[in-house]
Length: 116
Image (cartoon, rainbow, N blue to C red):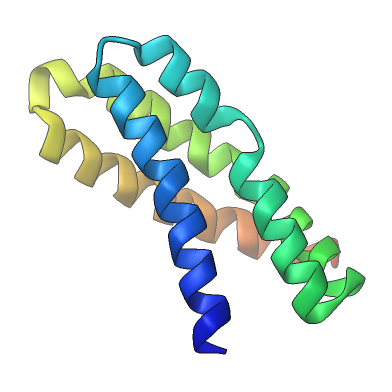
């Protein structure tokens, strides 16, 4: 189990490092493109499937879709407030908005039995 976690950590860290390097070296559009490539989800899908099978993989995919609106709220909040609030307040507010909207999404989807 520790070996698997180490691999997960290294793969995720490598992807995050690449994105951070691209963004800080004057290539923010390329960094955004790479960050939005489904690289992390491809790796995560594979690891979840190999560990837990197709049902859990489908549940994870539903979670990604369910939390997409919350992620969009977060990104727009940061984009619109970083100049006036600074990075840490913008991120804090964006994360708070993400958590709140994710909870609302989860509650609404539980009522529809779409995501059990």
